[in-house]
Length: 122
Image 1 (cartoon, rainbow, N blue to C red):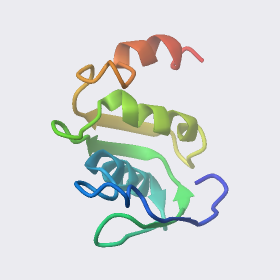
Image 2 (cartoon, one colour):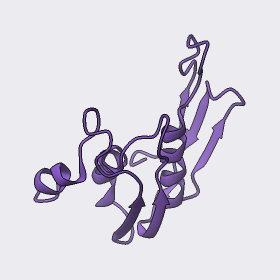
Image 3 (cartoon, rainbow, N blue to C red):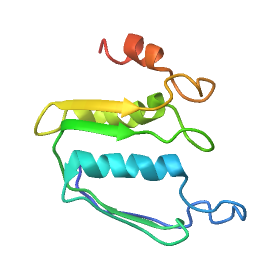
Image 4 (cartoon, rainbow, N blue to C red):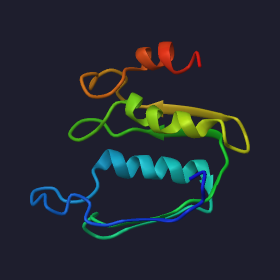
């Protein structure tokens, strides 16, 4: 996003016969990035195995996002890990509200408590 370079990803889990392509939480993260920017273009093919991403200008502002829960959903911490490095570069301060599971997948995702005591003090 910060470099404004377009990105093309092919064969995303194309060898997974049961569930090829992007997962629900990954598509949700892309929607969140789209809401945080102006002019971003995201194209995903029908099977979800190819993604074309052209980043726009990072705006920031007041954003609320519902993180998918259940099934292949990930915790709020998974989303925050990707957003924290970008938050400081918006044209406006980012006021982000994420709705979802805060500690349900702590074996694979950082909990909100962990992030608040490790990332936020930086």
